[in-house]
Image (cartoon, rainbow, N blue to C red; front, side, top):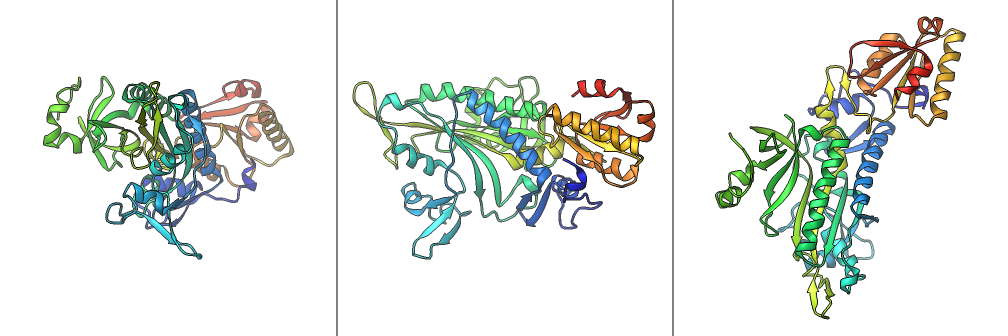
Length: 418
């Protein structure tokens, strides 16, 4: 993409009412546009990043047997009444609206009921199980406060997978696979070294649930963590006197960081029969006996994950994207406007495109300082600079976003590092 054709522009300052670092940098870099508190539009650069994150998650979910589908945002009141979660006194963050022909619908705030109702139509025998459907969709939650940028939104984009198993034993086998898949996701997006599998309350579903908590000062949670085995305990669970006996069974060396703030970037729950029971979601086993399906839930907020990456991987000059989620693989910056320089840069741009290397080409008529500042703010991992000086030597100046020094290379050598 030529930067001269990109309608978004960088900003020196973020809006005065935006206090979170992730939103400040993403707005200044032209990644997102703030509509209202907790609601953001993803601009071209931001959409590129979300798509990269989405594809990583999709690959990891498919690798463990996930089957992608797409559920409706509109939710049927009668379905949610079956689980008693339509009542505002039970769930207080619904967005609801009335239909012109009468009746009321809600906007999805989670997906357990929707999936249980759908699977009810297709599961009848043990031969139909297990099954692991998932989707990416917009979720709406009427949060009382939304002050953490895209870390906590009233509208956000997420992935939810639900496992439908014959029994707890089959469920736990998948649960273990899902745990490893989530670790793979966070490693691939560049925050695996700061992310801990964290024991949290299982509520009425199980002894524990598991959160994936990324240590970060912008976090709203507090965890106690064991650096050696990459596990942690949520402070809420740690402080609960009813959980003390359970916590003693964990093979963890936790002392008073090791409490630190953390951002929950994913979670997995054992649901058991909590949501299969109200929908009469059953199957006949080998003996012909009707048995309730055993369920699990596995969620990741893509916007929250994007915001966490920015909170952790940024410096005084801007964002520092890991290569797997960067909007482009390389930022080609042209300095100078003589014929030879323009021709050299245009040819390099064409060569990158022919090799299917995603490139943002800064062909704008701006001063070098402005272009470099924009490049650092946008945060693409590798920068190629073509100038009158480099063209005279038939070379390209190559600089990695994480390094201070640049290096002159032949164009052919520069392409190889990508």
